[in-house]
Amino acid sequence: MDPWGTIARLPRREIEELQNRRLRYFINRYLYPFSPYYRRLFDQNKIRPQDIQGVKDLQRIPFISKTDFLATANDNDRNRDFILQPDKQKIRASWPPTELASLALTKIVRGQTALEDQLATEFKPVFMTFTTGTTNRPVPFFYSNYDIQNLGISGGRMLKLFDIKSSENILNMFPYAPHLAFWQVVFGALSANALALNTGGGKVIGTEGNIAAIEKLKPSIVLGVPGYVYHVMREASDKGRNFAFIRKIVLGAARVTLAFKLKLIEMLTAMGAKDVAVLGTYGFTEAKSAWGQCPSGPGMSSPSGYHLYPDKEIFEIVDPKTGQVQKEGRDGEIVYTALDARASVVMRYRTGDFVKGGIRYEPCPSCGRTLPQLSSDITRLSNITNMHFSKVKGTLVDLNCLDNIFAQIAAVDEWQVEIKKKNDDQFDVDEIIIYACARSHTNQDQAESELRKKFLLTTELTPNAFHWISRPEMVKRLELETANKEKRIVDKRPKE
Ligand SMILES: [Zn+2]
Image 1: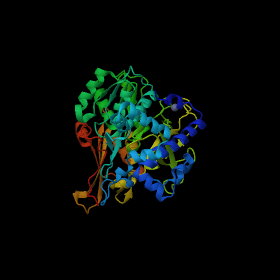
Image 2: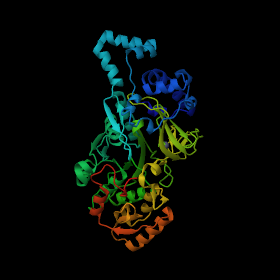
Image 3: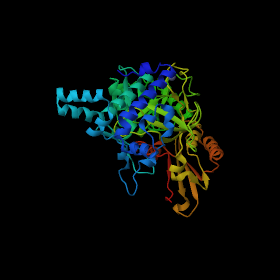
Image 4: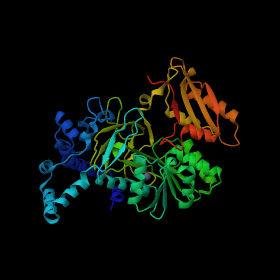
């Protein structure tokens, strides 16, 4: 039985004590003895594992970030050092006598093979997902069977949070890929004993196939990436389908605006659904886990945060410039420490995600759970530096804001922004081309002038051209049915 229900109601002090205890246990029993990277890091910084008594001592351990496990010219497999690598000697040297005795007993009673199987189940990498870096080569993150069990636990916790019972059906439209989102739902549904259809998104069975699957399965919860879920719902609503059974839409792998959620709800309501909630999730490869938004929040205009799993991880919020740990509720970069992982393990991992409102520890005003709550106002710190098209026409553009501009214009259904060089000449000036697809019965001229105004106001840039195009053409441009993530912003300029 997963103890989350009990943990979710513990007083704050008991949750803190639980985390301190788990941290000590994890560092002494697993991280320091078995992780080549962290053993080196501790030794180099003269940190003894027993020096870390609780969360407050974490600050002694240096941060790591993606750059620490990306391949370099000299070392292709740096990420391997993050995998726990136990052997007989290390186990003997670091585990307490009671646990060693239990291992010895297994060997005597069930034999050497049984003992090896037991250790392999806990430690041996058997599964992997990859980070979806835009500029870097993908890095694998490994799971043992123990981690797969944890992946099921976190997925099951989300379904519980969203109030989905095992008698209700689930439709998973996350793209079939070695990415966390798809598998989080697969294993979550398995562990919750719920019936799920994992369609793999548009690439595998097409949009028609997804719509047919929804009609047949009548899921009360549909999960996927925002762009594709929207596309499917839009197509279904155009065809006059009845989706009255859908209660919850759960989105992952991208940031969504309030305006986007409202559009989606409006569409589903028109298809017969009542009181639909659109909820976000937050997760990343290195955590091998995702977290869901509290569904009983005060309302759409002030979205609730993500309920965390304090027995599985520690989150810190730090100043992105100084690394200083921020006080409760303050803005900063999200830093993650695993408390119960095997195979690939990270500690004090700087996610590159910036959260406004940080973490709150008082009981949730909506559901009463005492779990720490991470604000859902999260943006990528790296959006500006990671993507090559941050500087357009010499102006630094915050691409996070484009979503918001378009979502505010009701007449726009889908959009794409293309950045290119004039005449495709690499030395010429930058050009911004907007493609938009209109909803039926709307005033396109008015929408266009409104959009141009908002665009200029927000980005200080004037689009060079504006094209209204048909939905099929837009679906192709965005690669909605073929790519894992829609091509919302396309930079066609040659890379520097
Ligand atoms: Zn809550």
